[in-house]
Image (cartoon, rainbow over all chains, first blue to last red; front, top):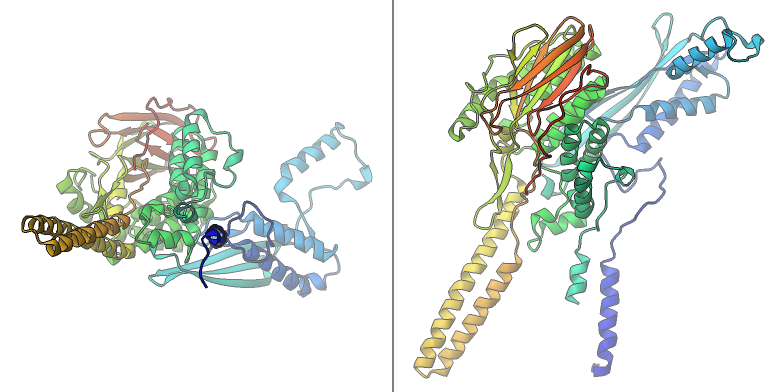
Length: 204
Length: 436
């Protein structure tokens, strides 16, 4: 087909449109994503979907355990800080906060957590009530702060490898329920994650 | 149309890293923020690294922490076969068009500084994680002999293990550190003596690293001298060369309370780490690009010269065919030059400009109380003058106080929150400016 001179501007405009579409970048400013799924921005370290999966697994496993399921009364538990034994510095509170909240929600009163992180505030409140500075219901008075039946303690252990073929990271997330009187481990479960990645040659 | 094509390859626009839009920078750091915004994501890591040191210098631990955290997030991003990476690999784009993550030694130092801040906050497990990553970053070095050979990182892992109560893991870490340290002292002397930037005798090379016990309540980490510089070497600057930023004349001294001054042990050198990383895979690609550019330039030169000569000879002899052949050769030569000029094999020579060179450590157990601590940098190396830092610290029994003392441009010290009884004299020197 012979190209008419007057159709040249149309062809040129079409080329611009095609090129514009072709070079459209997959960029975004901010968007909401599902924290339970791996996003576009990935890391070989702990990610949100790992925290969610760990919490889900531990909630199901712990609530099904006879220590909780067959208990005659709602046991009290203190969540201890998680220990990070991997090569990734991360906010450990994400794991413990998520797990504690999910446990509280799913347990529906079958267990209770003590808030040891605000001990100073509780002490000050008790003192204010007892000294008459603050009003309170005397029938709700307790002799002392609540002791715990169990400690819930988590840790993550990691192992890293690197070679010309890429990087690999293996992480084992473990939580234990420990008897606060005897130190006997009454329940334990783990979840492991292995991730591999390879940076472009320009970064190797 | 060409403009449109060029626009396709442009970098993302100016922006600050996530969270930094909300930060009101201290006045001296406003230019650094503006630079970080202007240079955008391509230089985020580099600007965050330099911002962290500047913030420490100004005593802004929170900002330094934020900068290091974000730098680590960016360093850990895996750029697989991304568009950015593809462009940086292309013969028609300079390597420095890529997003900067730094060389292994720069990534290691990012984790090291963050680890020290975690130590000061007594988050021993996250500090240990940082030192492990600092050591792991060096595992990307191509030179097998020098992979993961920072003695200080293993030593600090051991310190964290002691604080976490794991004696067995602490022993393992101290053994690794001792092995690396014994090799470092010899290698560093051989490497640096010809350059006059250090050497075993000048660094007061102790035979062994000191034991660290749970009773130790003061750990001083010193950073001395200037960062190494990256320069382009080769015909087109296609390889990275490392030049010493300036050495040190000797180790610092620490005087605690009424004791006599004691020498700090120089354990690692950033320059040493930079030069022992080995070649990169990318060097081979850039080398081929440089070879192509060189061949095209040479061919262009020969062809143009021959063409001009042939045209001259043809005109003199009134031979149109020779003139035409000469013209064709000249055109080919110019075209070859044109092709050569589009190939850009220059290596990326951006570098972390306000890093130190020598890393030292000193530990001791001292009775609890408000104790004056003096740290003296001897001068005579890259930093000419002797400088001293005097501070009264709260030392507690069985609680470790970690002090990070930096010679340049101060001296200045980064202390754990609440550790200082008296503040150090504010540093009079201006903030350093990086050149790359």
